[in-house]
Image 1 (cartoon, rainbow, N blue to C red):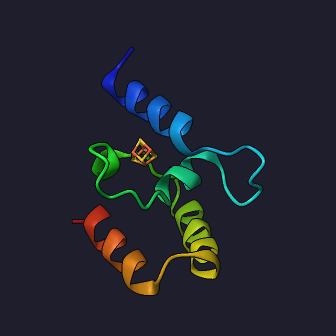
Image 2 (image 1 turned 60 degrees about the vertical axis):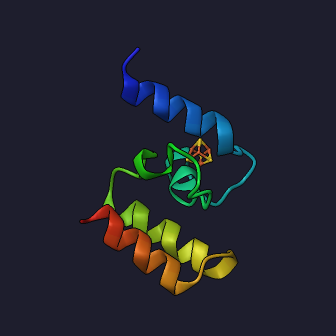
Length: 78
Ligand code: SF4
């Protein structure tokens, strides 16, 4: 098993709720807010920009501030 798959599997196991209709496992992991977790900086993200935008839009309506999303996006693209 690759490190990438091991990390992906760990994050999916940690946070993914299949009954949550607002997001794929990658979207739910992307929205993880446990920045103190050692895997947080390397957690998987959705593979398309549209899926990221969709997750951010959902997060805005639920629990994340625009500032947090903006910081995450800056970090992701730096
Ligand atoms: S980064 Fe988030 S989803 Fe992944 S293992 Fe850590 S707490 Fe769980």
